Structure formats: C-alpha cells, structure tokens
Amino acid sequence: MTRTPVTVTVTGAAGQIGYALLFRIASGQLLGADVPVKLRLLEIPQGLKAAEGTAMELDDCAFPLLQGIDISDDPNVAFDGANVALLVGARPRTKGMERGDLLEANGGIFKPQGKAINDHAADDIKVLVVGNPANTNALIAQAAAPDVPAERFTAMTRLDHNRALSQLSKKTGAPVSEIKKLTIWGNHSATQYPDVFHAEVAGKNAAEVVNDEQWLADTFIPTVAKRGAAIIEARGASSAASAANAAIDHVHTWVNGTAAGDWTSAGVVSDGSYGVPQGLISSFPVTAKDGKFEIVQGLDINEFSRTRIDASVKELEDEREAVRGLGLI
Ligand code: NAD
Ligand code: LMR
Image 1 (spheres, rainbow, N blue to C red):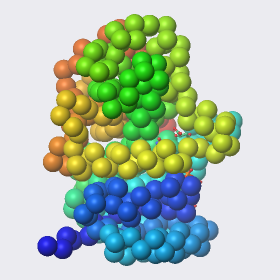
Image 2 (cartoon, rainbow, N blue to C red):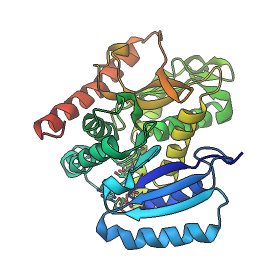
Image 3 (cartoon, rainbow, N blue to C red):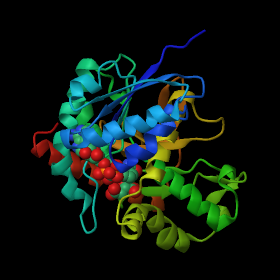
C-alpha cells in the first residue's frame, strides 16, 4: 500500500540548521524509512534564492521518499496542510548578545506564524520550535493558535538532553546507550537544569555512580547549560548539525514513542506539574506514546534540584511577562 505523504514545513530553510536538517528529513530519518514526505520551505524574501539552491540539491539526492518541495515567503502558503512544522527561522544569537535581547527581535516572527498554523495547518499538526528563545517563541506561536490544542506546540531542549547524556557518558565511562532517564528542566538557556538524580547509568542511580556533588554543581551543570555559548565562541556561529540532529530526535520520538524504561526531555505546555505554572512551555521529563508527549509524574525533587528548577522557571515567567508587555501573547 502506498502511504500518504506527510507534509513537513521548515522555516529558516536557507539557514545553517535548515541545511543540516532538510536532507535528513528527506532521507526518512525524521518520520521513518517508509514514510514519504513533502517539504514546504519558508524563508524571508532575502533567503528565497538560497532556499532554491538547497531545493536543487535535495532534487539531486533523488531521495525515494521525497515527493515534492515548495518554497514560499508567505506563512499562509508554507503552513498549508502541514502535519509537522519545524520553526527554525529566527535571528541566531551572535557573540556577546544575551538571549533576552532576542525576545523582541524574534517575538514578531512567531505570532504571525502561529496564526498561519492556526488557519492553515492540518488537524494533526505537531510544532517544534527551535529558533531562540525557543520556549517563549513557542508560547507566542501557541497563543496565536487558539484552535490548535496547546500541547501540539513544543520547544526544543533535546539538544541539551543529548549534551547532558554525552557529558555523563564521558564522566562515568558508560556508553550513552546505557544512560537512561536524564532530565532537562526549565528553559533552553543558561538557567536550564540538567538533572541526574533520577537518571540511571547501566541500571544504577547516576548520582550515586558519580558520587560527586561538586562535579555536578561546578562542572556538569554549567558545561551543559553553557554549551551553546561555548559552541558560538568556538565556531563563531551557533550549533547547527547538533541542533538539527536534536530536532530530528525530538520529532522522531514524538511520533514513534520513547523506549520502555526511559524518557526524554522536551519543552511542553505545563499542566502545573512540579510547581511549574500552568501554560508555560517548560522542559520536563517526558514519555511519548501514540503521538503524544506526557510529563513523567511522581518524581521526588530534592533541595538541590528544587532551587535550580525554580530559577529556570522564574526566567520563563519573566520572559512571559516581557512578551505580554510587548503585546505578543
Ligand atoms: P541562521 O541565521 O543560519 O538561519 C536562520 C534562517 O532563518 C535564515 O536563513 C533567515 O533568512 C531565516 N529567517 C529569519 N526570519 C524568518 C522568518 N520570519 N521566516 C522564515 N525564515 C526566517 O540561523 P541558524 O543557525 O539556522 O539558527 C536558527 C535558530 O535556531 C536561531 O534562533 C538559533 O539561536 C536557534 N538554535 C536553537 C537551538 C535549540 O537547542 N533550541 C540550538 C541551536 C540554534
Ligand atoms: C544552542 O544551545 O546551541 C543554541 O541555542 C545557542 C544559541 O543561542 O543559538
């Protein structure tokens, strides 16, 4: 039986994450090796020519699953019939720029895109916001799409999750495949909290395996939380291939589910769990099943974790206040 193609819209398609992302989507890594895809690329007018170049290269790969590429600078066209939307296009942080500075610059992009998703996307639309500040941009888009269930809007903290897996693997010597149940809490920013207290390394509690609270506080947490800035410092540009990889992971997990006995991290709409105010798009431990993320319930939060989760959530609340003040939600 021939499957109906899934329409995937990627914004910022001519940017560096777009370039690392599109070929992987078209090759089947986003949704599965048997799922045909149609790509819709959204760019600003100045980006259209480069997007056309990328589309030519996609053609030249002759991907068997790729059933068409449309390019537009109009969100109403680009999101028409979209089943999956990857909102990547935004202004990346450059050297010396604080993420907070990005709120105003990027907020205006996500409101019209949220409205276009509301008006034109398919009923089963799933949205991942990558463009920073990702959590609050997702909130802006979600607020502009009242007809779409709020939980369909998510923000990417999977890159942080993968970074934490890798750092813990290096520290313990266990391969990443042996590390389970790590959590990124809060905002995709330097206040995020990578939590190992419920994580397992080869079946043993990770915090006990590490047995070094000072390493957690002074090395692990800041290394993970400031990795984005470290990459910018080293490359002179923000992470691209690893960000695209995390976007693939996020959507693949959302659609295909988490493995038994494990969870992942994603920025999802809070239902008030763990004291995170309702409606904020905050990173939580999540499982995925039948195309839905669910926040893992019932974890004990120790004092070490509590103060750090609260600090990141406070930053999200401040960002929400700021975009309210700007009339963006
Ligand atoms: P880039 O500058 O290379 O590309 C951005 C592209 O978006 C450009 O081609 C630009 O023309 C386009 N664009 C701008 N406004 C647009 C709009 N309104 N509609 C459609 N396209 C638009 O940037 P990049 O390196 O690809 O990064 C993209 C975003 O992802 C940045 O905000 C960056 O900070 C963020 N990022 C997030 C994570 C994460 O983990 N959440 C990780 C890395 C990067
Ligand atoms: C990252 O985590 O690599 C990016 O979000 C950094 C940035 O600010 O673009």
